Length: 192
Ligand code: 5GP
Image (tube, rainbow, N blue to C red; front, top):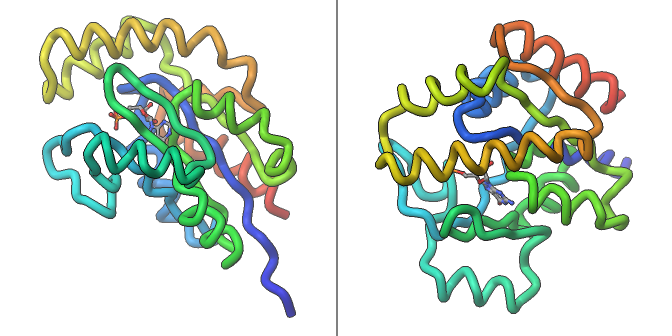
């Protein structure tokens, strides 16, 4: 029997909203049959990030060659660095039946949501912080970046809040367990 194709789950939300913690918990639920879309980026690795696990870290000319080759489902420049979703990487996982998590920012998500070839495969979820103040505190606690970068991320967050209505679902990450339960229910309702 042919393998049932998986879904593509777009998860967006501002830096510091807790996407990493949410994704880690979602992956613990094996019934969701998830795989992670490892993006390509020209950003330098942070802390313990590993090539091929968190991102494929590449230089700008390699990235632009992939753009020319039409290898991305979507890509963007986010505060000075390129980020893109590899078409072959994602479609391969989807064809194996995995529900693939695409953790991407709003410009890329918007491009992808307008691509009707994939629209029926996609569910999109925007994660909101309980408040802007809380977000700022979380980003500062991470303390891995310069003040200039933190400011850029905070300004970008304000822009991102404006497009949350383009998503199929909005989930507020105040209590992590509640957010996980909501997202798990959304995924289960869409994959069955
Ligand atoms: P970070 O530098 O914090 O890892 O990522 C910055 C932003 O880029 C985050 O909002 C993250 O979700 C987003 N991002 C990561 N990979 C991709 C991608 O392949 N495409 C797009 N459009 N955004 C991405």
